[in-house]
Length: 275
Image 1 (cartoon, rainbow, N blue to C red):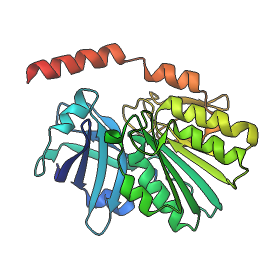
Image 2: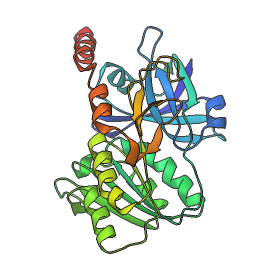
Image 3: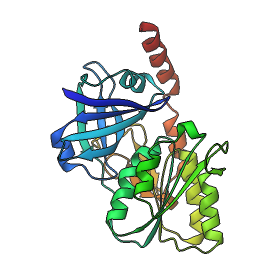
């Protein structure tokens, strides 16, 4: 059992849980994730590590409350326990001094973006960070990401804060102005990452994206997280979660991530009716 040290809402639909897990915190690195099972009979789901502290012996996860298991996590409080926490899993973000790095995050992807941009900053990069959400109330990790930014931009679809428009607008502006960009890192909704990759590809700007395909075990045995990279089948859990954005088959990724929607809706309905 893993004790929840702190539970809080980041937005109306996003929960952040700090969990005591010393053995995971000791080995955690930016870009990695954990598999979470709330209770003995619960579903096993992959969640990003939004932070980790070897000194405190804790890892922090953030989840968008959209399905049965994430809504179950959203009801948990400090002092509650999680049945299973497996990790750290996946390959960590490759870190080096690239030069000028533009990192772009949207929605729940901002939770993963924070430890990655922090690590990129520590590696000596000039960090240009762009965050976005549908509106101001849905922005998260704003202060944390800004604290590790050399340049910082906010975008909202409705114009309630920062640039009125999409994160891709800022990137397009940089390219049009011939701003020095050595690497683009993007994490968020699939459509957002696809747009970013399509913008950078004609300009040969190396672009890394972090994928979150459907997973069952998270250790490479089930094959549920298959993604097509440069025409070859890879597993999101052990070969990723980060891949070259110019080589990802986004159509296949989108289709596979939708395949269990009817079953997810049934599971959520039963969960809500049981409460």
